[in-house]
Image 1 (cartoon, rainbow, N blue to C red):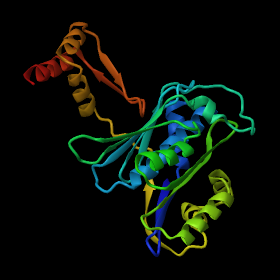
Image 2 (image 1 turned 90 degrees about the vertical axis):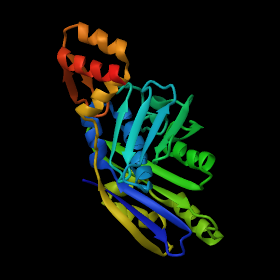
Image 3 (image 1 turned 180 degrees about the vertical axis):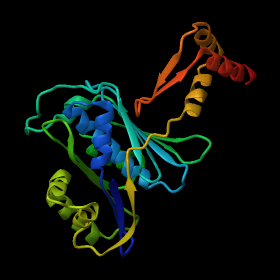
Image 4 (image 1 turned 90 degrees about the horizontal axis):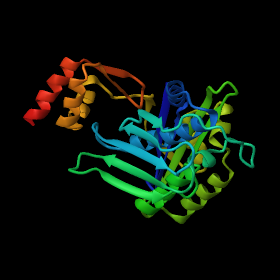
Length: 294
């Protein structure tokens, strides 16, 4: 089971979230059967979504990250609830490209840099909040940092990491987000900047046995902290037959009529968990009646 923690400086000037998302990313790889580079990209995005979801306030709140840089992986989507439980999908799960110049998985090459990061927050308002920023890196962490700076005007630092084994399984995954709160004093900013410039990578820390708590404390080392909360996180899909029925109804009367007349079983597959829902022609006809009444 993964874990996410949140700390705030004792003076209330900055906070940090850190998580070990290894199990969550491993489940994403198992479901989508991704190649190594796509696992790294998908894992970074779902980890970011999980931490951003943990910042939400209410039980019904959710956040969706949509990333499409016109790279070979296509569109990548990650959705998290307010507890940090997340799910994800990717348009093209298999992308085989050479390692980058540093000898690491080329996430930028798989994601691309010609596109947009969308952040959609459903927080109980009449319309969801939608923020968007151009992809500046394709490495994802830098794009999350840029989103906060440009769209929410919140000085932030995001670090994400996924380490993939030679057999394509996930060895480690995690990340952290630091955010400065209003009136953060210069001395705190200076310490954070020094820490960020010297802190090991997320996967290096996890490989050395660091917990989510250790990562958070290392990111804000030298600053007195108070722990706000912690929670377990997992890969969690909220699909159900009822939700699929509503989705089918939303496709319209003509589409349902066409499906009901085919006399074949209609199969709908969830993009997030690959679960398949089957509907007989009779069930489709019942949905058609419901759609006709609306």
